[in-house]
Image (cartoon, rainbow, N blue to C red; front, side, top):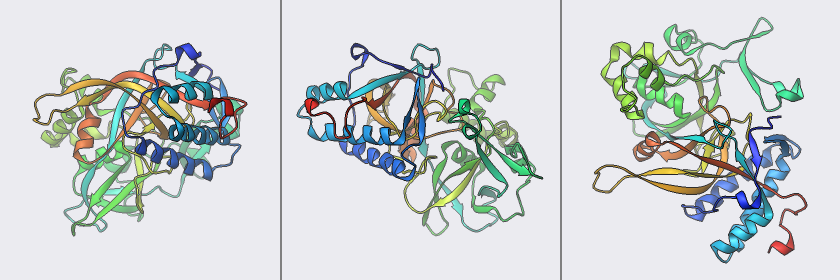
Length: 381
């Protein structure tokens, strides 16, 4: 149990319940989380600050929230119903004062091939068969929600191969684990960070690849490496700056990328982009958090600033916003109670937005009040 991760708010402490996107996208994202809860046992337990809640309670929360969205006659009516129907929990954040660091991620589009060729030398691997994921909560209740990823060697679980061992030493080559090959190592490196992408084949067809498993090693951001080495100043640091540095310094490229030991194994996806919880993601509505602290699939509210790009391309502005989102993903760099990654969509425009977001804000989770039925108390409606 993680008693300091979320704090139950009083009705007076609940923030303005505003939303800056069309309701259709919210309803679509809710349906994806309902799909997740339909696949897990109803009694599955997830951390919600000082308590644990079940998959059934989280499912009922979404059903009630949907009913309120569809039945409210005005914003004021909706807020009244939401406050009466749900408990609101605020994340303690990075400082135990509610400050959360938000970043953005996106689905890149890159060139690749399903067959190895000289023009496509960089492999995408599926998980080796010796990969194991241990649910520590099954051994001790105090570790509930925590997992350990490694590989099985002579009956013992040992740390998995690092990025340097896989890409630098080629330790997985020759084992028929490749599912595809990328044209560019930088594109592939950022695909690992984003977790999924669309591969454009030589004949123009498109294939979506997504996260299958990670090697369990901690994520080390290249931005920090470049900052520590004095290669890019803090003022100029951005996603684009890191990408540009790698492009302009091919002699440093491999060594720099191997500073991040975390590695993602992939699979070919049949259709939609899915997150690590195996449900399709919705642009602007899906977030990634640390499953050690926050419930998978749950309904949340975020408050921060977002970038605004003028049509004439001159400069970039910022506006505050509030939005309901679904906790549908996780990420190697998203650890602790003070980190959230917002899924921004697919392609270049999404990359521009995602690469700009590094903002402090607030995170709140909603849970149906005890005593309400899945359809809500009659007095609320």
